[in-house]
Image (cartoon, rainbow, N blue to C red):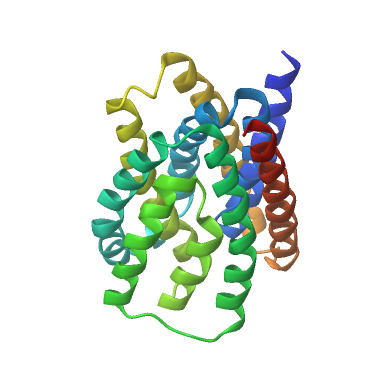
Length: 243
């Protein structure tokens, strides 16, 4: 019972933070979920939770969503996410932990590099990025910190960015969860836990809209890097012991 209370509280907090800057809920929750349920169950649980969280962010910023950008990004991203999920299901648990640890470390460098360089993306380049991020989303769960500079480089900001990123992520995660279902990796127990976690994220996300205009993403950026670093080290440690 204690673990579910802890998960619910962190899910609400994660929803608030992701509602402010458009991403980050999975990074906060994944280490706890892996510790409680193991990597094979934690990833489909968080995929379901991410769907609910993105629905909440879409609802909060529905009128500002750039549907053209969403379509171009997800046309290659949806099938790529399915391919990534197929690859994920074929890997042993320790390789998932190892991949998550390495990927989170790379994400710190990549996210800061993209943020510090002034660059812009055309609509065609946005589609190419969607295919790459879609595959990574299917493979390693959370690519939110990478999608942030991609959508901002396309020219989106504020509510338009949050809503458009959420709509795109919703379709990518739906593709991933569907693949899990077809491959028999989505049990009723996993689905119910995912809905429970997603409900907490939704509650936090919907309560955060009033804060978006008052807070900047600067402090959360440092927090995200800290979470990535700690989580990455934890996954590498777990991979060494599982192997």
